[in-house]
Length: 213
Length: 199
Image (tube, rainbow over all chains, first blue to last red; front, side, top):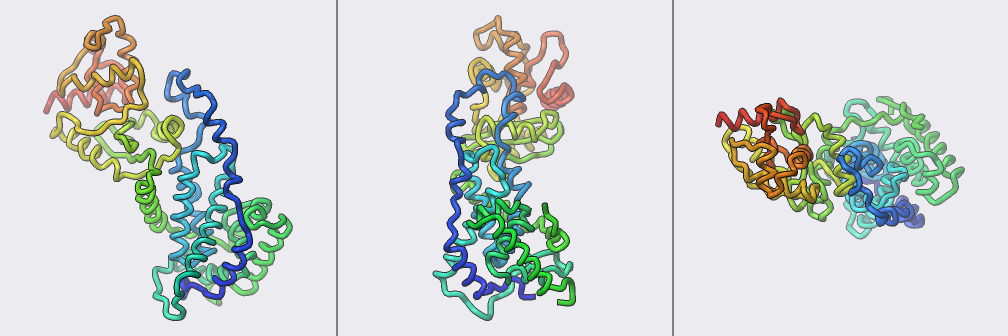
């Protein structure tokens, strides 16, 4: 299968689409700074056990809980190699910003928002490089479950129009509510819902499943 | 929420995630974002959690302390930038293996003592002066640091030692001949004392 082929026309469309929609990751960083400047009560507490009860989880837990989902999202947005880079850059950026993340933030939505931006960055970087067309060496497929016959599905997802693909990725793959998807895509909640449902309809039309494709 | 799971089965790809995790560990170290690196090692006293900041080894935790809880505490007290990143713990792992094999009598590791302060820190800083295979009573340690009245406080300092084994609180015993309490449990204390007596 040609699952790892970078689809140039898709990339072109994705670039154009994404270039317009600025998303402000800074909106996830709330008044945490102020809280951190509040008097440190830890010195009044005796045991280790009392400390850390209402603080942030170790970042390792963020990776463990959301790493797989973010990877699937990246693979819907980008070809395999670029998806790995997007994942890496997403989690490095998240690690950097993590201390300032609001403790009530939806962590998965935050990560998907960063991944959305990293995908844009990677596609812009691609645009500045000569893109080999035609004979692109196939790496490990890395899409879907080997042998489960779904790599065609992932290919089909990546061939959806951008908004539909993004809406499908963020709602159906990441499980974000449409209101969050709309925040990332920069439109209304209804538009996000329509894009996802159009995307699913196109998928059902273009991908009949399993080996018959 | 994910009503189309039939369309998008979760790809089983632990290898890909493990590879990406290692990349993240390296990038985090390179970018100065690895505030707390940790790993676990097996030992004769059960699995030990080892954690280090860029300044040095900051925490060793016994299984009975609940490693997840210890990591949550480190996230709260030091930084939430906590990652499983074994490489920073290579030297500590090697020295602990040598110690448990009876081939090492003293540790040569950079320590970050920032989890302790005040009197507890003072006690813990003095514990390494009790040599391998030796023991002291709580009272003797209190006298050693010039505060003979502080026997109970010495006990508390030993009980809250963030770096057991390496900072040898297991060499401090009650005067009644029993092994006494220990952060890793009495059995672990006995194991360490037997190990050092036999070597």
